[in-house]
Amino acid sequence: MNKPQVSQDHSSAWIAQTWISFIVSIVSTSIGIIYLPVDGWTKGFMGMGLAFSVGSTISLSKTQRDLHESKKITSKIEEARVEKLLAEHDRIS
Image (cartoon, rainbow, N blue to C red):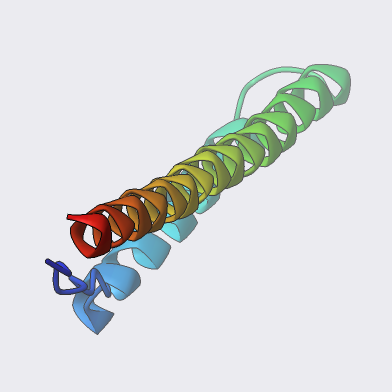
């Protein structure tokens, strides 16, 4: 009753697309901040906001990934326990 493991590897095209999208969005937002017709303090504040937003997004995505992986591990442990109980029950019967 073992289910086959399904590999969810990302293609190289998908990885390239995500990196290109990330880089283009950061560069274009940075250029927009640089060319804003405001003083340096305002540009600095906008730049800090951009940096904190990127950092928070990376932390959030890592946390979500870790939670998802821990649920998969917990589910595998529970599945192994159920299989062990069923195997013991079959021996008793």
